[in-house]
Image (cartoon, rainbow, N blue to C red; front, side, top):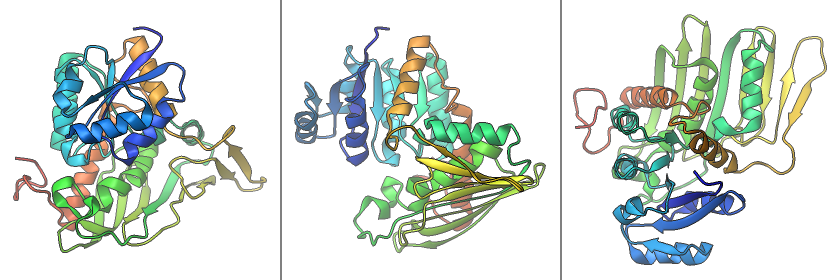
Length: 337
């Protein structure tokens, strides 16, 4: 692969714009094409960012031989179709979180990636953030002893109109997949997949979760996580990890922090800070490009098995709170038909 990695962007929403802006600040990345369901939307996005090619359908982007990797930024409900189309066309794929609507779809994508030998990664940019990696290393090295509790939240004030995508079951709406994926992923980064899952939620008239509380347990580790997500209340968006010998606190915006503080008995609090400005999405893009140059089909920072484990937890939470999306079977959890 050449020094410059050529990107295609599939979808034209706000997250696609943020990621594209970060890519264009990287000297070893080039955004060569964008695709949307309509040519007008693709053209407007291309004009905004100075992208030379704009496609009014996804298949044309997937077939473009000048693209090395496609960033999929559609709503959750289209992740399986869009990422699968690109993998089948031989493209590497970075797919937004939540990875898919449910674990069954995620398993299909991972199987396709491994069968075709093509790179696939969930866009869990938190896992690629240097400070989050430093925190995980400290916890892994026993800096706070054995982990006993994790707390994390992510809530937006709202209100969101009934026709907003966050209220639309057909688009995978609700707080859990958009926001709750961060607290769940944070907890599982440190403790792995839980063996006990409880949840409660306020549901909308459309049947998506508006306000959700989650309690996860790890019996062998003797640990619990208390997590929440909301599209009706602006929560602090903070996190903390407490162990038998200390605690780590993350400030608002915990999933892309500019600092965190390590507290240990008998010692002064120790602050760890990011260098320069608060980090954007370029760390995950850099990890994708590193993997591609190294010929790796999975990232060790965002492993596919980890993404599958998170999706299983999200499925279990939805099962507990009674949220099911169109097309999912009624009597077998949230397995998709």
